[in-house]
Length: 198
Image (cartoon, rainbow, N blue to C red; front, side, top):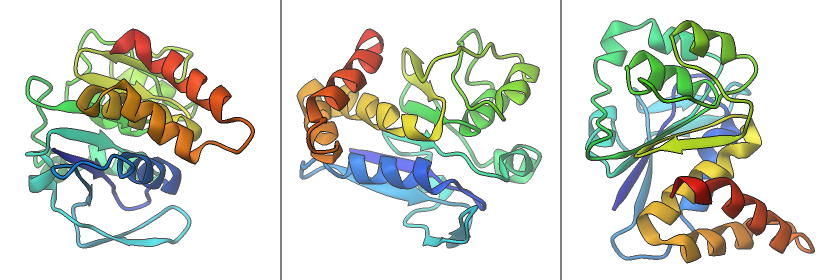
């Protein structure tokens, strides 16, 4: 099982790295999580350099693909050569996007008839792309999910884990990273947010 996290220049560390960490809490021999980028190294919105583990082509073959956000997402969607590399297919993959990553799914025409979640900054661009935006942190329909707000990344990761490894694996991953003294609250909230969409 391969999960790829699309991470572009100017990426938001919270989106890519929280998902990366949570998804790697699943301990199965066939489970692999990778950062996928269009170049061998990308720099975050705050200057953190990150090396890609797989190419965009490899990511397009993954069982699940998450699209992180960043300050240059509008540059990504305005680049036909880059966008043409993203051969994603919800018929054979789980697809998820966070914040401005939702704009990428919208521009790839993968949100037709599906309301989405995104951050407040990206909302007008997603709506301009013809996708209605909900005022909530997470939504999914079939194999496509979106999350809005940097700290909603654990909902997106939990949804992928629940879909691919079961709800108990999702509970365990959230429980492990939740603050001490608040673990049950965090787990309950996460499961309440994703369970209607499983």
